[in-house]
Amino acid sequence: MLTEINCQVIKPNDITLPLKDGAMLLSDVIELGPHGTSFNKPVTVQMQYSSTSSGGAMEAVVLVTEDRSQWSELKTTDLSENKLAVSVDHFSTFAVISRPKQDTFPVSTEEHTLTSSTQPAVQISFPKQSVTTPTQVTVQVQEVPKRAVEDMKAKDQSSCGLVSTSPIVSVETDSDSAVQFLKPVTVRVPHPKRYMDIQHELPNKRLKVMSYEKGTEDWIDETDTSNPRESEELVEFEVSHCTRWIVIIVTDDFDDPKEFGPIPLKLCRWLQSRDVQFILLQRKLNANEFVIECTLEEDAERKHAALLRKGYKGPVPTGSVKLFEGQKVEIGLLGNVSIAPFSPKPQITFHSQRSNRLQMQVIALKAKDHPGLDGKGDTSFFALPRIEVPREKEQHVRAAIAKKGNKAVECPKPELLCQIPIHVSYETPKVASEHGAAASKGLEKYFYFVKEEVSTDWGDLAIHLGFKWADIRNIARRNPDDKSCCFDLLCEWQKREGDAATMEVLMEALSEAELQSVVDGFRTKFPDVEQQGERE
Image (cartoon, rainbow, N blue to C red; front, side):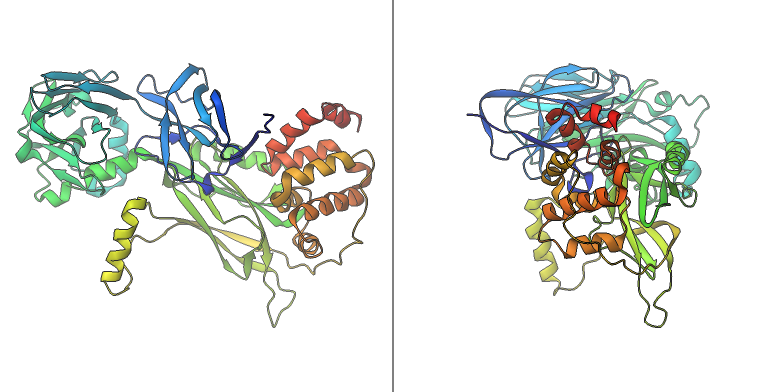
């Protein structure tokens, strides 16, 4: 039967993406609906994404979720430049991520050797009867650039005893439980000295085989149990189960295994992190409106200049700090300033390939002794802990807390990254204009469309149409719901601006408020909208 399909872009703050080491978000997160819509035949969903040039070592895949937290991978049916297509029988939420390429192999009970397609020097050799039944095995190789090791050593004194590493090799099966091999399996990796092109001799070096303990962030020294064997080109060692491995060379400066144990973890975090800067600017025409952007360091100056041209003012970007892909950053205000109640959650999720921008309204708090005092303080940026607790483990965590007598369980705390001063002028709220001003006849049909499409995001649109906190609060007080507020806002805007209230201005405001889907809807529903803007 005739079915109306809706599509919306989900803000990264509202989802949880499974970004493991080396993975990054490449596309918008798209929700197609209505939920529960199923099709008699499979339909094709095509996702656009920003490409990343990493040769054949990386691959783009489409992920799908029903609840915005538990994701699964979809098989790609068509691949072209910057586009992926998948086949589905119902609508959900989709995203494209990039990750180190995965090779999937069937492993039988016979002798078998697997070779990585991206790093042929990496091989996994299974002896006969090492598995009881044919098993599907996935091999993934994450390259470790020599430059990353050098940068980490230069900035982390505790890592300066690290000389070189192999790539990180992961071997997994479809089973959620740990698969134990009946016979030792041999893993071969490039020798760290050859892999990182170390030309000088290493008389005091020690070679270590490290494995990742699943479910934790710990890496364990398995040198004594894995029987490593070195040649000029390769290192091979024996393993008993599926996990991740890395071979490192350290100097004799490390006497205690506890000293070099954290090195693989630090390295993984370093590979996943990016140098970023924060931008905080204030709109010239509306001192209560602020834009916050978390951007890659190399893009900060350009994005800062672009915002200044759009009518913002404020300090230069912060100094450089490190964030990992998918890192959540919380924004807090100190002083007699506060985030307006209708503003979005003061949180940014950092993705290096996507826009990380937050619009918010800040108000000066009324002081008892000084009612007209301006708001002054600091904007603080906190990196939230990277804690992932699977749903099935949540019960065990609660039980552990209860066992400790409901006492606080020690856990990582938010880390203060940087601060920027903030200043907001205190303004006496204006008296609301008479409610119900009618829109001009030429724009009325568009106003009704915007009212239906924007709805709960009307506050964001108001900010970009130049309305101040006091005006928005008055509109909210005198209307029973969001759609009424939105229509009231548009009528008020048209009354204030007169002939300057044009479709061109409205569409630009919608775009700046990250409501591009409404702009696209205009062009589809009202083909004359572009000509309307040109005439005006």
